[in-house]
Length: 249
Ligand code: SAM
Image (cartoon, rainbow, N blue to C red; front, side, top):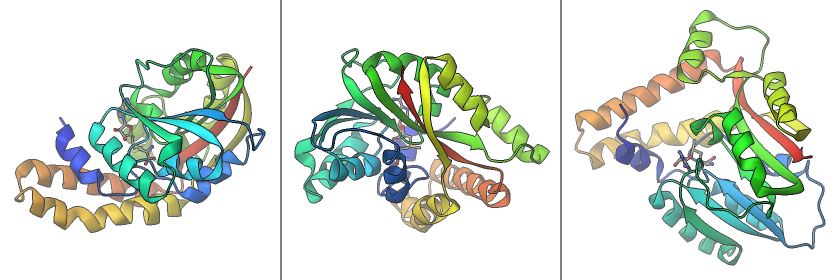
C-alpha cells in the first residue's frame, strides 16, 4: 500500500508528475479548431503542479480551472503560474475527478494528461462529458499499447495494474460509444518519458531519501519507482501514453 504523502513529496519538486512535454501538449492543442480571440473555458483535470495548465495558459485566451486531489500540488502550480505571468488565467480547485463540482455544459475544453487512469478511461469519458458544451473538446492522455502484440511479462504487468490497458482503437471505440467524435491521436515520444519525467525523478531520489532519513517507507517508494522505470526501459517500444482529442457530438 502506497503512502500518499510520501508519494506526493517524491513528485512535488518535479516539473511534471507523469510523462509528457510542452511540445506534445501543444501538439494535442493543434488538433483543436477554435477562434483565437474568444474567451475559452477550460478544465485541466489531475493537473499536478500544472505543466500542461501553464503551457495552455501561455498559448490560448482562456480561463482555466486546474483541478487536483492534492492541494500541495496546486500550491506549487500557483507559484509557477505567477512566475510565468499567467496566474490571472488560472484558478485552482482541490477535489476529486470522480465528483467534480463543475457546471454542466459550460466547458469548451476538458484537458487531462496522465491522470484519467485514476478513475479509468471509460468511466472518465462518460462522467466528464456532461461538463462539455456541445462541440467541446476532450483531450486526454492514457496508457496505450503501441504494437498489436507484446511479451507476456509486460502484458501481464499492465493487465494486473490497469486492466483497461488497450490499443488506440480500443480507446477510440470507447470515445465513439460515448458520444464523442475522434479528432486526433498520437502517442508520446520516449523523450517525454525519459528526459522529461523519469531522468529528473531518478536525479531526485537521493535528496528524497535524505529528507526522509532513509526511512523504510521512503526506500520502498524509490524501489517501486525504480522498478517501474526499469520495466519501461525494457518494454518502451510496446506502450506509451496515447493522446486522444475528441469532440462532444
Ligand atoms: N497532469 C499532470 C502531469 O502530466 O504532470 C499530473 C499527472 S500525475 C501522473 C496524476 C495526477 O492525478 C496527480 O497530480 C494526482 O494528484 C492526480 N490525481 C490522482 N487521483 C485524483 C483524483 N481522484 N482526482 C483528481 N486528481 C487526482
